[in-house]
Amino acid sequence: MIDGDKIDELANQLNNLMPTPLRSASDDLKSNLRAVVQGWFDRLDLVTREEFDAQKAVLARTREKLEALTARLDELDQSSD
Image 1 (cartoon, rainbow, N blue to C red):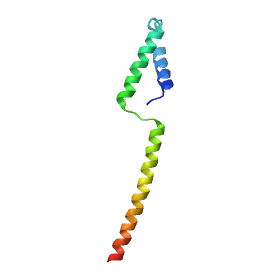
Image 2: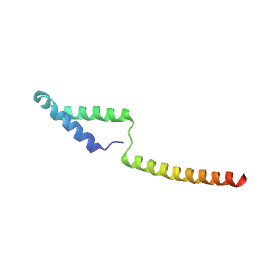
Image 3: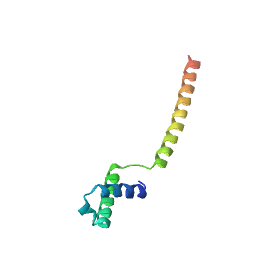
Image 4: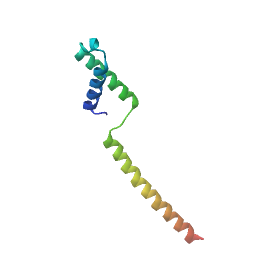
């Protein structure tokens, strides 16, 4: 899930890019922009940095185990010849 503060910040930046007459309805516009931005991110199926880092660590451990098992298998193959 994307940080709500970042979404608010992006919605505010988009609001500031709007023409002045549209900015007069600022609160309503910001609310709608926030919903649109949140929808964009939801459709992108993004993960948090913490989730990414956790999966990266799991992958690294799995890779180490695979390399160790491959080396062990090679040793067993060599000794059976």
